[in-house]
Image (tube, rainbow, N blue to C red; front, side):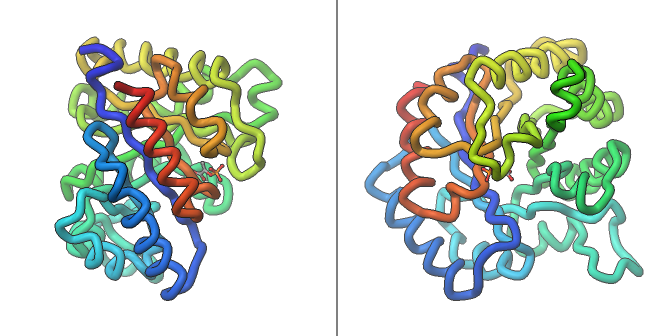
Length: 259
Ligand code: PEP
């Protein structure tokens, strides 16, 4: 398997944005922007807030756009006020989940082992999972980038080994998220190649088959130079996913460049 045989993927992380009306309009616009593109290679996912997950999953039933949760609780069920389980996400008709986003790690103090537990809950519910990893600016400047992202990824892969197959990794440098300062293609490629090497320590076939996304200030303008890199299989997009035309353009670039 080569880079060309991994399915390119563009995922929109809508975070805690929008209202009922905004989300309905955004989804309508994303659907109508994507329709004429007739994407054949590029998969597209959206990750709305829990509050709108059911409505979005309902609207997307039968569509080729997948929908998922931005997080799941690490416990399967029970007395967890405010918690949402992987089983609930599955029950709503979603097939995907993100775990380990840097905002969860920073704002909610989620450790590597919590992220690994969340990953396990997703697997139990057959949710295809995107595991996010990424270093802070301080860690990058201290030369710790690879050590940090390997540690974050291994927290999951050391537990599950080759059963990681089918999951995805998103490399999201914390300093690039929401800042307008994307990693350069070379910076992202260096880290993503080393994440793939880390997966190869588990299994060579797993490493070749696993999609590794880049996230951090991806726009319609910088998508092409990022997607031209061998180890960048797609993008996890925050801010630019809230504008349907920008998001669709990023999908169109992935479809074209990743042929
Ligand atoms: C994100 O939060 O996953 C993200 C990549 O955000 P942005 O594209 O806004 O940097």
